[in-house]
Image (cartoon, rainbow, N blue to C red; front, side):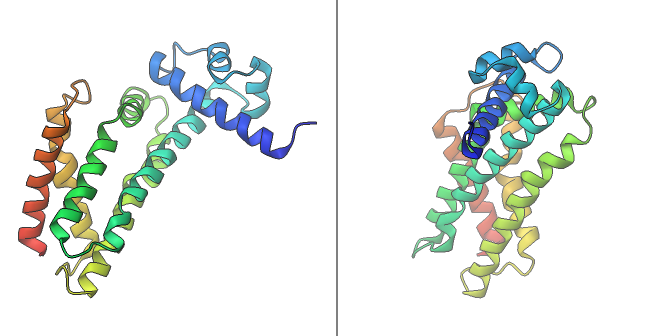
Length: 204
């Protein structure tokens, strides 16, 4: 008899496999059998968990967005106790956010959104809620706490969070040619330091 834990594990394997196949093939070319093979399950098992290909795509993209969000929220943790060198802490957080933005998982997620948004217009709201919106809120909370402790002067922490993220991520689409060019670590640090320098000139 399959336990509930085993069922959850299979569902996660299916969603990971589906995301990998959709990212590799696109929605139209992906087939459920290939997803089942990628997940290491039988094809009927896929349908037992998710009723059809469209539902599978939507859930796979949502799960991928949530994984990306959890990684980014974890990257903000050093801001809870930034130590004496606030600039270095913000730079470290910014660099990690950029590294995550440029990893294959995140690039694949963005490519899927760009290519399939007209077919699944509702998926953008799901991804935004699981991604940029939540990240901005979490960063705003960290900046508000730093303001209360006298480390920053961000009278509108949410706007400050939006601006910091824009300064970090804004240059990357052009530099990476929309995710088709690999950006090296030295260049990520260059973008990070320029962004944090501009941010602190306003809010330090």
